[in-house]
Length: 137
Image 1 (cartoon, helix red, strand yellow):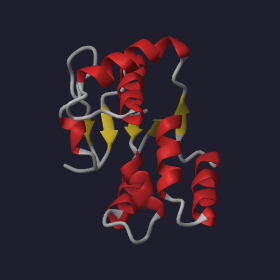
Image 2 (cartoon, helix red, strand yellow):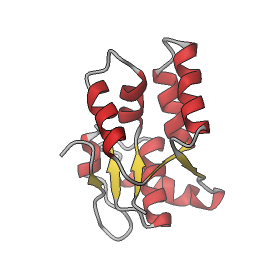
Image 3 (tube, rainbow, N blue to C red):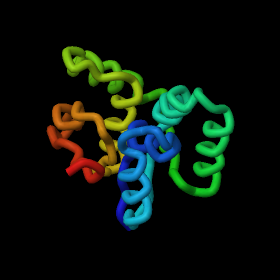
Image 4 (cartoon, rainbow, N blue to C red):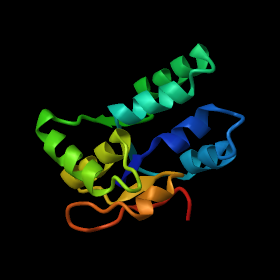
């Protein structure tokens, strides 16, 4: 089964009809075959951006609860790696949510991401590999 990380951008677009990527996010989800993974900081970021409507935030959480996303935990032991990544890419800059996605890629050997964020063309994992963006090609 294919495993792909998903960043906040496509998730926000999926639940915000006014987002420029809304239709693309729906099409992506309809065509995607596999398991989408993300981290709690990405969920938090997405929920914050959907704060224009509590009902939309609830719909997002219900979608996760129905299996829309698989949540990958960031362990306490990963804090050193998160700090290392944020320092390494501070000129971009890399935020906590993005850093947790790179750590998740490293820990779970995931090589693809769905994102609208061009920073992922700069970020590299511990093996110096880029994540392949399958959302925007």
